[in-house]
Image 1 (cartoon, rainbow, N blue to C red):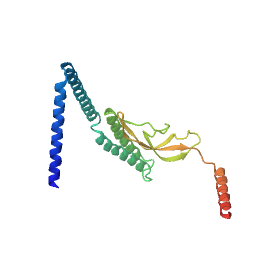
Image 2 (image 1 turned 120 degrees about the vertical axis):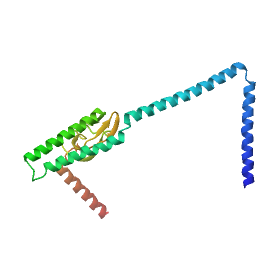
Image 3 (image 1 turned 90 degrees about the vertical axis):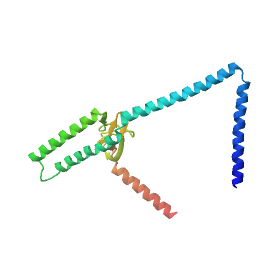
Image 4 (image 1 turned 180 degrees about the vertical axis):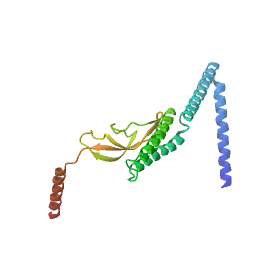
Length: 205
């Protein structure tokens, strides 16, 4: 087995050497003008490859500069979510409802939230507009449907969780509820009755 591998290796080496010699002979047979053209072609290809690498490195550098804090920004959104949850919990606390203490606490939380959103905006991170917008799969994630005949089907009627963009990149989609047409109960009853009739006929047959 080892002998066969050595033979294959020697054969490959001989073939490679032969190919190089053939190339060398071909180059030697070229006239000066053809040699110059061939060298120019090689040089052009080498330059094109270098230029492609340069562009690739430039893009990677720009992405690192623009989106280097992407992961940190995504984690920061949890703080905003927690503020929203805290406000909701306080506003629904029966022992605090309509009290001055509740009003002061919520006002402080609103100030903190506003400051956080301002800091995000300065770093090119902005909220996605969702309410009253047509559902966009690139920006929104529909979590549930709400019957509403006054809205066009697929309109965002509730924002469950805010979505954010970082420059032109989606940081987090908005979790939303979208509108759908009210289902007519009478039509449903007729459909159910028709379905039952069809089922009975099928059983009889």
